[in-house]
Image 1 (cartoon, rainbow over the protein chains, first blue to last red):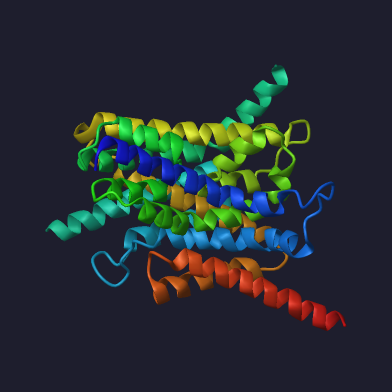
Image 2: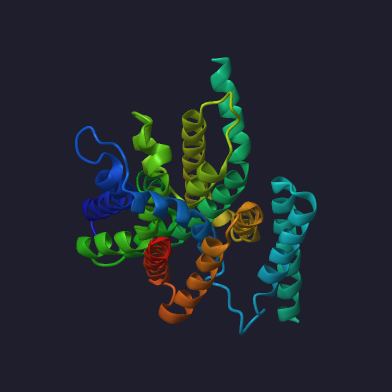
Length: 117
Length: 231
């Protein structure tokens, strides 16, 4: 690819990516002149989706984990359980993230050493 | 000026997890492009203009293949599809924000959507301003990470690897908070179960598209059923 072709590719991706974020505003944002109310279905959908999306993003984070081979996803599983337990106990986002990430790295290190031996 | 400062500080505090997440993910992404043979300008420019982690990884890979603008367009729309649903959920919150609307829409990444949607802004602060600051900060973190990854290249190697778990932990904690305070668990539980089922059924490339379409179908079914019961 030439540099120009690369820049064109990047520009297409940038515009298309913005478009995926903008299109609902384009369609539903200002329905016709003067009327600014959303249709009840779209408004309801907007209220229904966020909790489902949270669940979806949690699963999304695990999409590359191999649960049936290698380390069986143990670092991810153990660190997630620790994160949940710490959060249920203390309800401090900062602490939960810190403890979760540290435990992930500790367990990961442990599993990694295990594999090398 | 003093008020602005308060909102900026609040945004800085709320976006802290994203700082760690984006700088480490961005480092990984910059490093990835470095290893594909690109100068640091590429990850930096792409982080600035495309601003979407998963899209950028895929496009980086396509830049070393034959020029195929149609494929670039198609892949970006598929990978970015989920963002349309963030936008649907933000129609009200972002709808009447004037010029800031364009920035808020541009910056609607997974993490920024989640933080802006779930952050309860104190009454004395303006929600629009807080959302704008969080959006700007997150964008900056991502660009910084991508730049550093591309610039430092092979010096860094893989030392930062395990830190990206902070993003997973962030989503887990926010999902847990949501779960504990909601009255009905229908949406949360469907989200988890449908995503797992879609991932197993159609694999990594299309499972988010399938998941979101199924969720819309589920919501449609639920409203129909409710309408019937009311009659």
